[in-house]
Length: 553
View 1 (cartoon, rainbow, N blue to C red):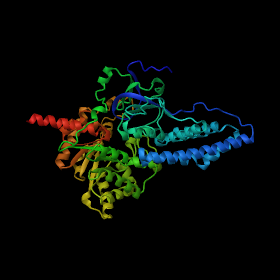
View 2: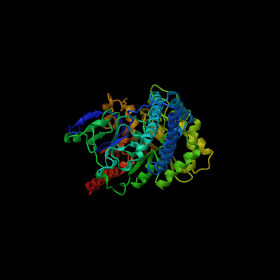
View 3: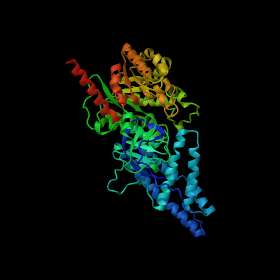
View 4: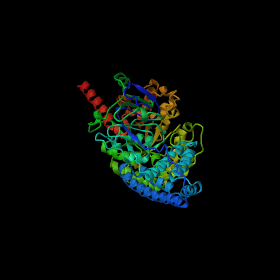
């Protein structure tokens, strides 16, 4: 396909996997996919033995490589994320898979490359056709193993298209463009300075999606054929809110996307948040917490604990959870950390829990419903957090509360655990997430049971307007500026004031340009955003405070 980057305003609609907007040049990353594998017929038993020996050598080399990558990844992208490389090593060395490949080489007398391509291709196809979205995304891992073995056998390597050239930025201050981003590919990038991500393949629970959200960078997927239309250095507009990419955006298009922002304007920030306000950070991994500490966030307003389970691909024990949560508290020092209890369902599937497939998981067994229906999982996590309170103040946030009756059952369960532990009750702050419209109608009763409330605006907008923001046919109704939404927020803020309870907001809208000032005007003075957005939000609040002070002189 001819490259057409010289044409202005080429618009492509894909799937939003991480919100935000940015204009920047691109860096192209090629996985060196093996579209064509040479097929050879093995004429003798010696040829077969030679192929088997090649396979054993490649397995050994790739296993050592995965151990090395794992060790490096622990330092670059975090311990939990690095576990995927050990998982891939175990899959690659699975005796059943190894035996199947050797048997097919012997029986079919085909080249090792062809057999590996066929066997792993069959597994990859099976996983990609599963109903479970999380398992579908795991087909990426199988494909990555296949490519790794073929790369080793053919001495080819994935990398940036312009790698080796003097002007190669390796993703620094650029938008990464790839057919698909895998866990290993992420280790070759300067993730802390990536501005956005565009991929042809990969859904909302892919490696690229999860990492993009944890980095707080806009990302769009599902843009088939886009890789062939771009070249290194092409300027693009990435609209992660709408799932849109514009190649060579015109000035008019830039102006139309009013919240497009650059990193440079946030390179300096107010050292302190204005009095009476808080700029907290959202986190999913320990690396997010470290970034929050680096930008001097006032605390962690939302630690999404489910991402730790997703990375481990299993239930974490009470002790494992305690150690991970302790690390987060150590990084933040005396600044507060709020841990959200396991929030599964919707777009966050944990296949090892073997939750029955639902026709509409966003309205199914998720949030507080899951916690109440999984007493052992619930109790283990609460025990870990209650133990943590011996070290300092801990916030426990309950997701997807629908009414005061449900909240009462959760509170009883937490208090039952507290009664069995030697803890300081004053060190535990209990909060409810307001993201279901029914909870807003029962807000006073819920506030009277907890110490604070937190608004989850992402799900709130979805449920309030009955809109799936990932559905391009209706995504226009996913509108954070809708007057009805702001009326609902005003009502909840009034309820918090009546009951004397603290209220924060941790959804993505808190980081939108001009939204922080509007939220503070409503009386919502505690904002939790991606660590990357902390400087800009603090700057906006500082400017607002300065203008207000000048007006009163």
